[in-house]
Image 1 (tube, rainbow, N blue to C red):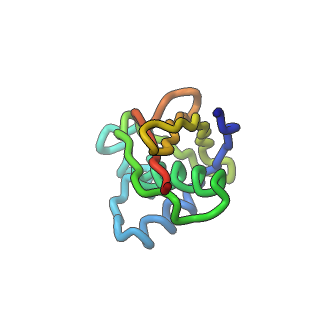
Image 2: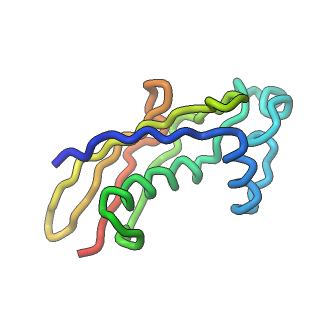
Image 3: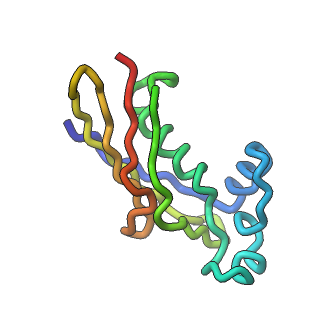
Length: 126
């Protein structure tokens, strides 16, 4: 079964709030000059922030938090977050399968048409 795609907007203000909440103050997530100085094309979203969006997507589809028992992915490409109100858009879609009594959601997580998470999946309770 296919789950319809959802688009999530990420702004620099989101990254500042996430840096504070997560305890990850690395300035590549908040400071354009620092990000460029280390060879990045601009400020990038925390990989775990992007993975958290995938969890949010699954939670919203299920209709309740706490149903994910396993969540994983590889961080394959950074999400570049431009300054301004528009920020970046992350598009997440999923396909649900039941196999050996396990309900799994295989996810697609993209930004600007490029995959940003490799092999993202969530395993659900029951």
